Image (cartoon, rainbow, N blue to C red):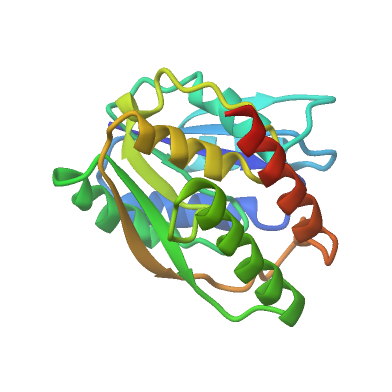
Length: 220
């Protein structure tokens, strides 16, 4: 059994394709979808319809007034029941085909973090490099923490409470998993360009992320 946590914000253009692809790639593996939706569009409506049509075991949590990807992920983690869990975005930038190969690495590790190979805009490239430098400087983590696909043994996160509710929750999660003594590995993936919907990241996002990173270091 695999629990798949999917935080969503206005993904009505991609959610149907994502669910069809997820079902195809996990094939005969028994899995449960935990979708946490903070959208103002029809993401949840479409998701319910597709899950019914595809016979996907699902828990769709529709929230109002809640903000932050970390906040949504934390809500999803509270519902974990399976021994293996996944966190993945619904925008199809992280293809579900990588989930099972990452699950296989759990034979030797406890937590597998995807590391992206991608083409991106110049300001996001510079922002990403700067962010990674500060992550290493402040937390000693020398790999891509912000990739939106993570596979892990559920026991890794059972006692973790995230202080950051926004973009840098990934850093806090990985830092606390490592600090608890669990074995972490990376898995290289090709990040694709989203075909529908709009990215939630803009030219000012890296500045806010760096600020949040420093604040996080002061808290934990």
